[in-house]
Structure formats: C-alpha cells, structure tokens
Image (tube, rainbow, N blue to C red; front, side, top):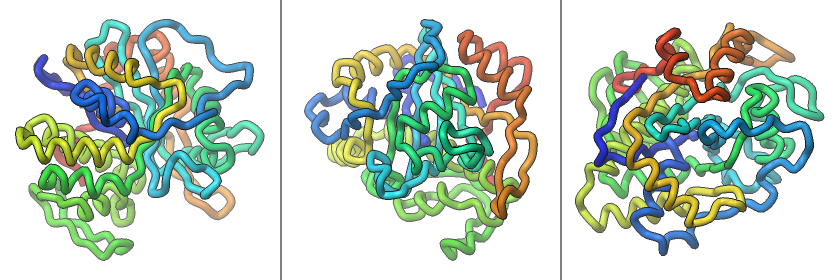
Length: 322
C-alpha cells in the first residue's frame, strides 16, 4: 500500500516490528520531548563487527526493526523475533518503505545452517539477526530497533484504543477470541491478540504480517490525531519504555531523524516475496522467492523502491485486513 501524508504528519509506526514503525515512532517522540531519552534502552554490541558485511551505498538509510513477545534486548532469554521489518528511508527524504520479512522464512543463518530466520535472534541476538538479514538482502543495515509487544497494551490504552477494519469473521482458538467483520475498536489487550493471531487466517503468518502493519498504521493515525496532553504523555512514556535501540543511536540522531521525517510524504508497506509454504524437519516454514527477493532488495540498495512498486504493485493494503 502506498499512503500519502500531509506535511503536518510524522510517519510513525513499527513491527515491528515491526511493528509502523518503531524507529519512526521513536524519532517523532524525541522531537516532542527529549527528557524521555532515559526510558529508551541502548543495546551494546547490537551491530555486527564481523567482516564481509555489505557496503553502504550512501543511498538512503536502513533500519532493522523487530517485535517480540519478550524483551527484545535480552537474547539469552531465548526470545525469538516475532516480527522482522527492514525500513528503508529514501535518500530524497520523501518515501519510507516498511518491508516485512516472514519470521518463518527458511534462510541460511551464519554458523547455524538453514533455519527459520527468527531463530537467528535466539542463537546470537541482534548482531546475528542483522548478519542474517544482510546476507539475505545484500542491504547494509545502518541501525537496529526493537519493540516489546507487551508495550502495545499500554500504548493502545494510553490513546483510548485504536480502530481497525476486518474483512471477514474469524475465530482465534489460541486466544479464544472471535473477530467480527467490520470496523472494530481495540483496547490494549485486544490489540495484542489482534497482532498475534495467525491461526484460522488463510495465509497464516503472511496475514499476521498485514494485521501487524494495519495495527501500526492505526496506532500512528490515533497518536497523530490525539490532542489530549495527558494521553500524549502516557503514550510517549509507554512507547519509550518498550523500545530498545543499538548503542550508537543518540538522542540527537533521533531528533534529526524526526525533523527529516516531517517532510516524508509517502509510507508504504510491503512483504518480502514468497514462493510457497513448506515443511522442513517437521515444522512449517516459508520459502522465499529468490528472484523476487533479489529484485526487491536491489531496488532498496539502489534507492529505487518507487519504481519497484510501480512495476509489481507490491504494497500491502492496511485499511482492511483478514
């Protein structure tokens, strides 16, 4: 999906994580209030130090964003990345591309053979996950940010809930929740269940990705439209307490990023091209489309995502989802 924003809008979101996007959210918050800086966790050693990383092209900037049901700054807890997104900000400053990588994507992980991409975080934390993504995409990751999914509850409730549109009635047996078709107002707990669901969705984790992106888009809309200063303060505090960034990210960098994003006019959501689902070692996995992956991330490296979207119509619709 390609969305145009007026100049008064700050493009924010995540998952992520990835999840609309955490780094954009954090950037906007820093522009509003520097004193929240102490709430944002810095992760020492998050960026890889090994040789063989892709060279920086100097065309735009790339952040790897993850969302996790556990604290994403502590890999020793065995957490896996539940949402993985590569965010590309164009060199011209007018376009932000949020590219989801399926967490069950079957890819080579350095030192661990071929496995699900989200296992890279459990094996080696942010640094190994970044190396894995760079190996897959040949795109240099400039910075890393992570969001604890548990923060979604407090962030959503701080804004008085958010609205999403569901196209078809569906039941989630994992959380024993039935979603009715139509526009739904979600409180924090409902929002968390909404972004976690993949059971009974026709495309499983791929539909889950679209739900995550739809929620982040709705969260961004509500945050930007809120005028109540108490709600804004609660939202900012909830967001910053849930965010971790790599150790090189300073408050000044984030404020500069926010100022840059004020002029961004296009936000689009994409999913890394998929060939099919399959089974490997008794587990369900997602096989990526090698040619599609090459084409998409070549466009990212060349800062030419707009032409890629024009050729492929590859955006995800987030106004209404399964």
